[in-house]
Length: 399
Image (tube, rainbow, N blue to C red):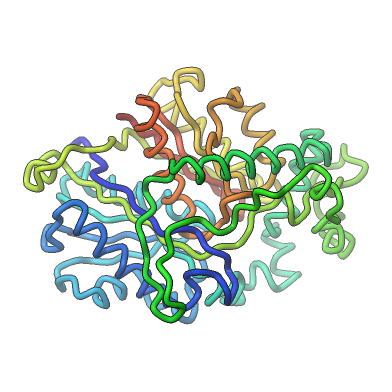
């Protein structure tokens, strides 16, 4: 098997999933075209060298339907020889796109693969595809497919997470993200032009630096209502030792929806030699996992442990973790179960502060991890994310 090198990792800023968001006016194909161009400019890449483009995208509906990976490549004017594959493992899709691309390079199938993800949630909202597993109550109950927030409340209840703990995690995420933005730590962001608004988008928009402990504590629980309609009963039936589900998650300690895209260029050693550039990192291992769908956000923990076990690496031997901060309770579970110290986990904030563009999030997290590993001259990092249905995916990256 060949070594798989990361030659670049770029992304757009994460912008608010609203009409006034900085990227809203761009179709997903337009956003991706801008990133393809930036990747070529930064690396000297000739698209003829690329064998495949693999992208994560969750809501494959409307403008994001029709295999957006292949459609965007054609829209960007890349050669017909470049393939395109769109994958969906819910919120971990971007990580799986990277993993699939890495396996292609490792097996010698391709010399170069571009992988990442895209999600324009202001244009194609979550659940726009009307997936029966989420919108049909009987079908959802049969599959145990719960909305992520409900699963987060269950995880919080099982792990004894208080509302105060959840809010403290959210506050730390906001503070860390605001500081990282101020210091210019997010080196993977490339400028994107929005000609409709006449602006150049260069900074993440979802961060709320004015957040306080008091403002967070004033917010109402977000998932108590749906819990009262039958979700709590379903969760309690699967966890008979619990007397009740505690609803500690609010809009303040949950991730904001966002628009964004991200790309990573991976290839073998010969690709770097042909481009005259040094690799930024190496994909050492990847893993996917699946757990009880009622504990929908636990897949991240199992996938992270699995990818470390593959390489015989302990959490203490990993310099940095970038884990899917889907809801505050998942941070507690990740730290407890994996034994991660606070100074190694999501050191520049997580998706609670930065925003969660579903299919793009995993790829963005990989780039964020690589940026910080370079800044600290760190050797080893793990990126992992949970998805609906109890799924999870992880990568082990080394420099």
